[in-house]
Image 1 (tube, rainbow, N blue to C red):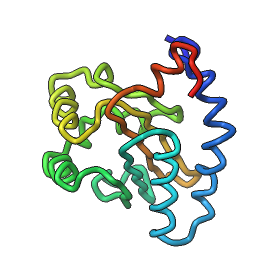
Image 2 (image 1 turned 45 degrees about the horizontal axis):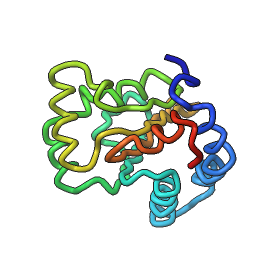
Image 3 (image 1 turned 135 degrees about the vertical axis):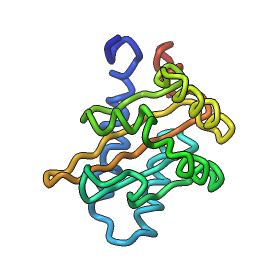
Image 4 (image 1 turned 45 degrees about the vertical axis):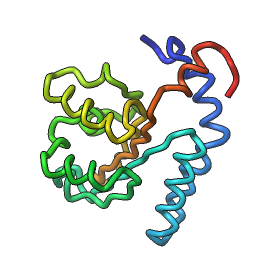
Amino acid sequence: MGFSDIGIVKTSNKWKHEQYPQFISLFEIDSVKDFSQAVSQIANDAGFERYIFRLLPNKHNPINKAFVITNHAHKWQEIYDRNQYFKIDPTIQHCYSSHFPLFWDKETFTSAEQKFIYVRGLNYDLSSGLAFPIHGPNGEFGMMSLGAVDLWWLNIEQHGDSV
């Protein structure tokens, strides 16, 4: 399945012209409060209810030690961290090994353990989304994952309707 098969061509043009400048502006922010507000605005403008931004100074540091900005439910973050779901989460695995965004949904979670994470996440409004890997020139690693209850934004593009 290619990008054109899922309607990403039209979506990527919208992202390029409307959300991309917002995303780039994150690198010009110098306070955690302003950064958090900007990430929230990017997620909201793109139609996502949930977001998590993780950043590590080195990709060899454990992901649970990352700087995190999120609006995920506190209870979900506790469950996720306590059970170390980050070790088997396919969105994190993808971001470590790729420079390309990942559209994720239930099909992304393939093993029994991953499916269990996915089902638990449904209780916290996480059923689909888009994960962006971040790889810095000196080994820095991060990711921004935008989550939604439904793939409404992708379904609209697939059917050719405008957003």
